[in-house]
Length: 132
Image (cartoon, rainbow, N blue to C red; front, side, top):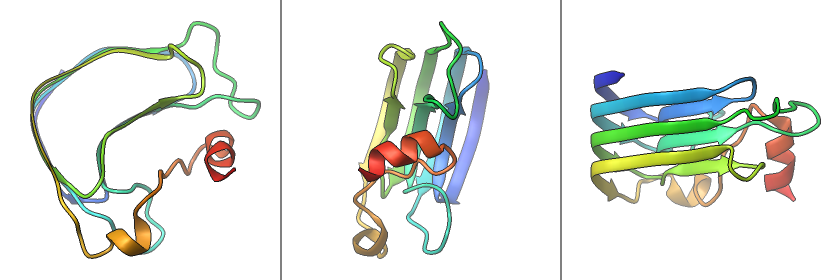
């Protein structure tokens, strides 16, 4: 359990990004997130929450590996980006619960220059899919 977290003035908030094994039974509660798009070579597009599972030839996912039973409770976010949940393999991310969510999507000064896409740097397999 992770509780009473503050992410302030960040380019990305809470991130679950994995390619070997499982992430299970995690609760995140009582959290404040304020993200913004940052110029330069930073990872992230101001997403308050990101979950993605690496997969593919370069990063094979072990059979049965999953991200599951993740609960977010009492989350307050002001963000220039949305939530990202993504897996190349159907069913690798499941049973995600978001309760008591107060979310404001805002337009920031860097949106036109840097917004409008997803940032999957760190996994060349995903990055190739998104670029095509």
